[in-house]
Length: 136
Image (tube, rainbow, N blue to C red; front, side):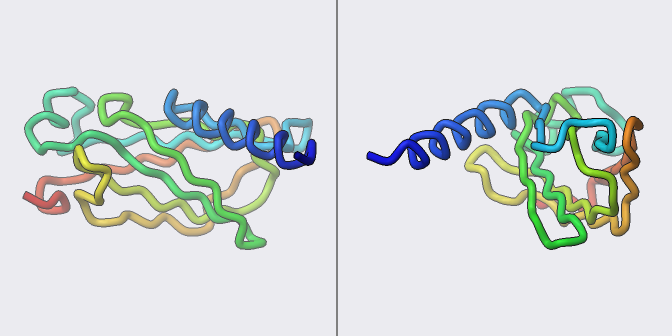
């Protein structure tokens, strides 16, 4: 077995484990990298009861950079967000949606385009899901 296959498999496991904790580290952690935090609320609340009330288990976030590279992660609903550290400076399209207990989309997809990430800084994107945006 080639060492490159083993290392890429291990890298995938590390990314999967990191995505479950709500924090994702992207290669490029240096002086020109920044972070992007996605903060989510349901009906303008970060009370975990909102997740239970709407049968929401998780939230999914997809980042697309200027080159079309996609970074995706999933967090528990009651985390109400996640942070992507070590992102290269640039612009990102952010897509966020809620998940049901089977991992299927439970809400509309909210898209925020051209989010600027600057080296050494944290960019915060606030997203609210009103009841009408969540499937019954």
